[in-house]
Image (tube, rainbow over all chains, first blue to last red):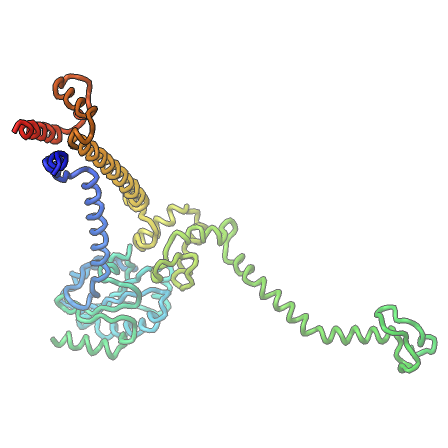
Length: 191
Length: 236
């Protein structure tokens, strides 16, 4: 071993410095956390299941006749909430059935409530007049009710029991007919 | 008609051959051309009707468009607003390009409001109030709109700043390490000049700043330790 080797071996190694938390690190971590939060919120929103059961979200509306209505005030009655629009063709097919249900059950503690979703008021009123709808109808201002019920398109119909629980969620109009609705409503009234 | 004098006359109307005696006597050139014209017009009549129909069909949309709009409100005016709004049912489809009945109704609603003298901002605000924020591409609230529009750029600038800062720090750290390792190299390897500078600086700390003075406290301490060990080893 030469002197040089000895000296090189004896030379102290520089101390490893502790990593410091700098402003850049904080900003970077905050950015990553923010992006992760946004992604998580979006995923949670997308994976939110449809409203098949549970307590029906409460809402208040003013009908086209100017009558205020609140869902929670209708506790003790069976409520059929129908989301529709005048531009929706299936809605035209189911409207007479809903009117028939209203006429048949209105004295027996059943309320049919139409919610006009994403519709122009003049067209909504024309639709109501064309189909001679006498059950209460109201606009979904700001589509807030539709958001609460996770409406993606119309028609959608919810049948809510006397305790305010969602019993049926009917997508489209295939089951929105007098026969099917009567069966469900009779069962709820009997229970 | 049919005279012998006409037999050798060239037809002035159509470039037919000179009439010859073989032609029927009652058919003069003028008569032939007249008949040919009538025959042609009869043959072309369906085509003329077809052409007229096609022209009518071609202009019908323009007529319809003209009927749709009121004076002062054009379809372009309607579409200028419609392209900033989104269809209620079709995902990511703007109102101007969507062909659903819902969008047709909404476009009509825009037109009605334009005719009523409402501004673009008022119409969009009305749509948002009635159908929610999802009908617009960016929030109407100034704060949220600013966040939505500028957050990506702010993040980009921040990321670039962090990257530049980090690179600069790495570079500075690398230079410092190289400098420290050159100072820690045994004097006999580096050369006498370096040793003398080290000694000079250690002998007179208040002298002009040497490379040593730029080192951190920890690295200066290492150098002192090293020097002490070196002197001890040399004595031993």
